[in-house]
Image (cartoon, rainbow, N blue to C red; front, side, top):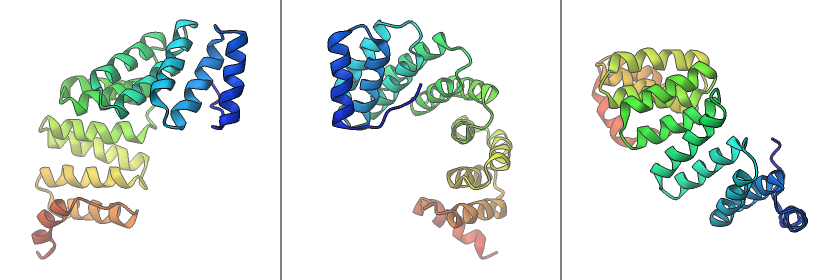
Length: 208
């Protein structure tokens, strides 16, 4: 579904359509996107709820609701919204990726791993899903699996700076300090600013 340009004029246009046809799900969805982009999150929630109420296939509206709930810090609602999205569209990789990220934030690690693997199964090119999967394995204290996943990620997206950083931390957790330094330096060369504590931890190994 095409996301419209965000403007007061566009918002007014969608509201005019809805005043004539209140059950137009597409206009409610488009209005929700425009309001969301302007930071009017509560109004956007109302618009997406209307879109969902008037169409049984509005999985993208559920994903956008998940994004809004994440911005509000309501992780249980993020999970609920993305579960609704994948119920409607079972092969929707982004829904699984979002679900996995939410589970990761909630330290529901095994659920995060399952959801992120599902996202990658349906779309192996979502670099952020790979990156979050590395973090999930680190959260599970499985550094071997974190390294294995991180290597696949940087093979897919070598210029993904956050991914290089996460692989560096996986190597550090696996006590492979030379490789950790190599990938951290790659992340920095790509514009990433690593955590000062991580830099400090690796500094002694640079001198060997």
